[in-house]
Amino acid sequence: MSSSVSLPLGFPLPRHRRVVRANRALEQAISEAMGLRRTVGQGATGDLVDVLMQPTARHGSLPDAVIRETLAATLLASENTSAAGFGWIVHELTRHPEIQKTVAAEAAAVLPASGPITHAHYERLSLTARVVREALRLWPPNWMFARHVMHETVLGGYTLESGTKVMVPAYVMQRDARWFPDPLAFDPDRWLPDGSGSAAPQFAYMPFGAGPLICMGMSWSLIEMTLATALLTRAFHLAPSSAAKVVPDPSRGLSPAGLRVRLAIRSDSGNTADLPTTGGTMAGCPITGRAE
Image (cartoon, rainbow, N blue to C red; front, side):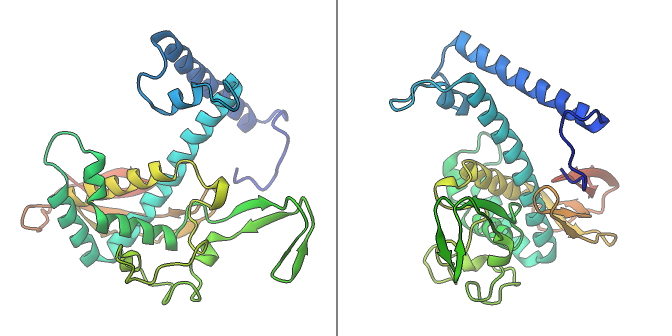
């Protein structure tokens, strides 16, 4: 995807062969999952596979090819967008230790020490959810998306012919001072539920797109990032590595290239233990962690 040379997939290059093999493996795995679901019975779990395989009153049963493509797109989009978004959340928390401290306190108060985490727990993580939303404002992984003009339209004084592709730069819009006062500041209180923050007007905030084609995985990604943030900050204190130089990489969704973070186990008193250094990865980026 990041190659500057675009050649047909049938062109005999090693990377093309890898893509073809990977696509076949993914399609085979999804087909096997669909076959197993038909064997054990549909409707048992209510998950996305069940939803897509259920006939609808308007369209009947979807073709298997459409189900496979939808599942593949959802898997890939949910991994890439959530991983990049989570990386930016971690980056901002290392830059704002006081906010990180309050997020950790909220997680400790809301999440159970053991046992399952439910949607009710997620709904009580109000500060963490605002942190996630503000990080996605400054650093939307889907930083630009396209729309096609269906009929001649006048937009901003320009006449757009039918079929024109319009690129919508969410990154630029979400950093525009007309919609967000002090737009470069990381301020989760913009999103206070009582409306006292500087809430964005409709369509000025669109990290998942907007309108009928809004990302179908939006709710899933928000839940995933919010719970991951709460669990991480409850367990660890996050600090930037002295070697870190974070650079936005727009090649496959906006991701924090070069993100390096030091992790220290968080004690009940809020102090951190000076523990041996180990390596690892976070949101597709290298990290340095201190762990037992």
